[in-house]
Length: 450
Image 1 (cartoon, one colour):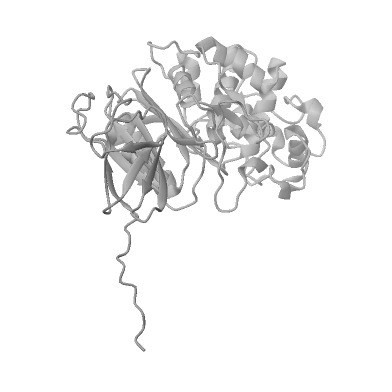
Image 2 (cartoon, rainbow, N blue to C red):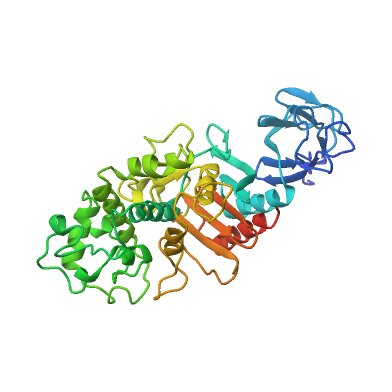
């Protein structure tokens, strides 16, 4: 007996190409062919600004005998106009009747910038990204990419709220410098011990050696003398305690690694404590102070302290953690002053414009105060008061800061020579090598476009 072989040709069930070109859309306003990037079953497409996206004919090629439907309507490749103002569902029906579904997310924008953003999304598995950029203190580019919520397929915009992670430290610095400028606080004020800001709350007896020397400035510079002991994690054994409760343990039990002011060592607890200083000196909780005494003065209304997945704001992203981590395990109120703020990229650009020495958008702080805020510490010339400075790879960057939480990756930078600034916020955080470098490269390229 001879084995039976299947002589039926295999059905081609793949899309060979999807394009939106000028030749098929001569009256659309397109200046050049669209940028098309496929990630999984999603096509991300960018067309030129000014293009009429409500009537674009896609050109789709695939195997013989296939037919296409977009949003339930049959499509004649290169002929049928489609409204791409919303996410479109593309269904391919093979010659054998099988169906494959895809989604098309089309937007107008800068194809050079968008291509780099899509590359980050694809390589590092980022569901949603928001990006905004300014030139001479005016927003010149704002765009959302991907999804704020992959379940509902809500598209990201530059108005969506993202967790800022450690970019929050720059905001806390602005809050502290506001109190300094008003004469309510000095950078040289002692924090602990007799005469310290928290003398009453934390006591004066039994403090570890050197604690009485720590100043507000040391906390802002990360030169307090302590190293980060992950005091905010459940492993610390301090669960349930607020920032002052945790700091009470530290100041009485955790020896310093260095004499205050002599060495930079990134210390999250220091910024948690700076938030408490704002609250004690102002008499307002941290969020209320920042919103009423800082943001309201520059017309910013949509920056908040974040919450858990059950207390997210209506226009806030969902966060997608990688490598088995859980971003929703973070107590956002606890880390409010060091990593707990949420904001949109558009609102953040207004804040940057208010602390950049410019004269188009009024600065919220005086020049002398800004000079103090951006002066690097003597212990480490790459960190000032809550802001990173003197980046060696991009020497024209005046100030910048990034942030990392499970489910969150962020970066914000201001460039003096180009009189530009930009911020990128992601609703996931990759731990693959190169992720951070790709964010830095993206922002520098964006600021070079305008």
